[in-house]
Length: 96
Image (cartoon, rainbow, N blue to C red; front, side, top):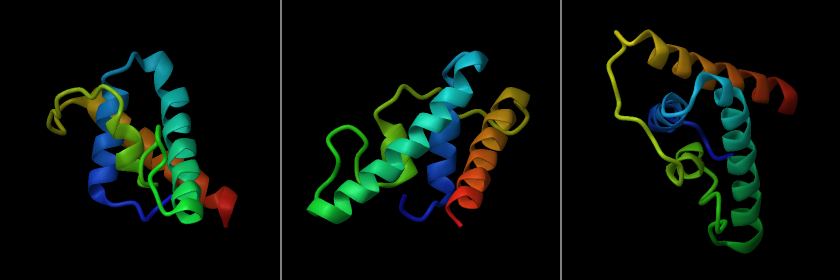
């Protein structure tokens, strides 16, 4: 996966927010795996992956329906941010 920036986390959190809570863990797992696969594909071929994009988390998330971006007064949205960040921390621990 390419370097993760604020916009990547925001886009992924909005994708999670648009899904039922029971589907969110599977979705963030798929988004991260997709971004990893797309990055490897882009390095090997010089082009974007046809499904997962350019290798960024934002690109992987962009093909999915996203909810409107609420503010941080929305507890459920905050939980989506936390879920994305924890998944990224876990990924780093696995790949370190």
